[in-house]
Structure formats: C-alpha cells, structure tokens
Amino acid sequence: MNVIAWMIVSCEIGFWVVIGLGLFTRYVLKKDKMGLFLLALTPVIDLLLLLMTGFDLYRGATATTAHAVAAVYVGLSIGFGKSMIEWADKRFQYYITKEGSKPTKRTGYEHSIHYLKGWGRHVFSYMIGAGLLLGMIFFIDDASRTEALGNVLRIWTVALGIDLLIAITYFIWPRKERDSQKGRAL
Image (tube, rainbow, N blue to C red; front, side, top):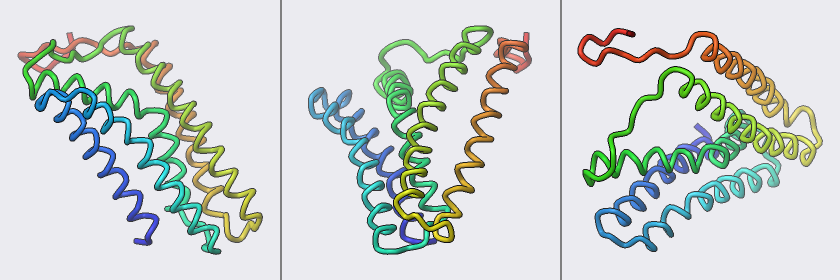
C-alpha cells in the first residue's frame, strides 16, 4: 500500500477515534464544550488528507486509485459526516450512558424517505468529490498521470445511479417491519 492509502486508513480511524473521544468527553465526563470541540475536529482530518494528497501530486506522483479514493473519502465525509455523528451520538446516549430512547429501525415510507434523503447526501458528496477529482485532473493536466482519477469518477457515477435505483425500489417495495420474535417480515 502506498502512503496515500495509509493516510486514508489513518484518517478513517482518526475520524471514529475523534468521534468516540468527543462523545465520551461530552456524555461521560460531562464536558460539553470540550466534547463539541473534539467533534468539530473531524473536518480537520479531511483537510489533512486533502493536503497530503495534493502535496504528493504536486511533487510529481502519478495519480493512483488511492489518490482518487482520498477525494471520494473527503466528499463522503463532508456529505455524510454530520449524519454519521448524529447516528453515533444517539447510539452512544442509549447504549453507553443509558439515556434517551432506543434507536428504532425505520420501515415503510419513513425508511423510503430517509433513504432518498441519504441519496441526496450522496449527490452532495459526489459533487464535492467529483469536483476534487476534476480539479486534480485539471491541475495535473497530463492524461497519462490522471487515468486512475477518471476511472474512479466513472465508477462512482455508476454507483450514484445504482443508489438512486435502490432509493426508487424502496418506494415501490417499502421495507417491512420485522417480527422481533421470529425475525420475519410482517
């Protein structure tokens, strides 16, 4: 694995460590401001990855799939970061501090709407990540050095389309509520 791939892995681990520390500080240590500060550090992790990727390419490296995934990661982190923190926050409150209500699994049209909103976040993430990928392609201005970036952009475009199709299917065939005792759909 190259340096950028290790940076992506490190940033993902750092993202969840910072969230965990922020939630622990906020709910267990009862230091709200410090907890919020730690949670607010998550975009700094993205910025670090972006700077490292840009620096590597600026030094003349040929763009690899890892460079492209870094742009995808930043886009997804910005697009889904807040909702991931909210997801972790609710579960931390319920399972760790034993406060709040148990997170419920969405079913029916509530799930369909939620998934469609998630697809909207995916589109937002795509716009950011694709913008970064296109920016790198434009900045490098050498097709032989940016082929991997274009390939990942094409794959992500297909994935975005598939995600839309999945969102549509949830409106046609809404997720059914499961019988908790038997594990079957009702």
